Amino acid sequence: MNPHTVCGIIPARIGSKRFPRKPLAEIAGRPLLEWVVRGCRKSKTVGRWIVATDDRRIGALAHNLGVEAIITPRTLKSGSDRVAYVARGLSSKIIVNWQGDEWLPDGRPIDQLVDALRRNRKTHVATLARRLDPVEAKNPNRVKVVLSSSKHALYFSRASIPYSPNRSSPALLHIGAYAFERQTLSQFASWSKTPLERREQLEQLRLLEHDVPIVVTISRVQTFGVDTPADARLLERYLRRKRQ
Image: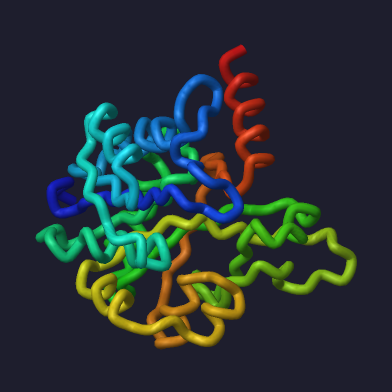
């Protein structure tokens, strides 16, 4: 696939309730957003990266890192809404949404995501998952997904799904990254929040509640979502161990 047909957008907002100023938080000597941008730019399939943010300090950091930044309204409620706002001015056929708080070592998960969308021609949204330890599955900050036999998402939840009576079976962790066909992303952003989306506080349920299939590809690459200051400390320890 010609990389110029794919644009990557990194939503990064300043006002996270669980972790204010998160994209600017220093982790192992660099702002979190810098770690994310460095990994994203190693993708072989994405020819252009844009940071979508509601704060000029984050925009300035993005420019210093060599990527574009677009300031979006603070009224936008989700990362994908922020991505859709930026995508309106693009001509790229595929839009990758890689969250600004999801550390990645290199571009392999992004390339896998784009490949999954390209191979599933009847599906217009792709996302990622990986195996999750049963103990971690109880953490509501870790979003779980269950799949159909064709590897499409049946449901996403903060609860531990599927039910495991002996708590020994691994779950699937949803990695909050997406590859959208641009028209589907635009349609998603035009819809109001849906009941399950409001209940779980998970934007991807808006797609399922409108019967939009989401293909899920299983990644073996270790990524690291930073939702809270405790997660930032865990990532810092992980990165420092890698340097040793």
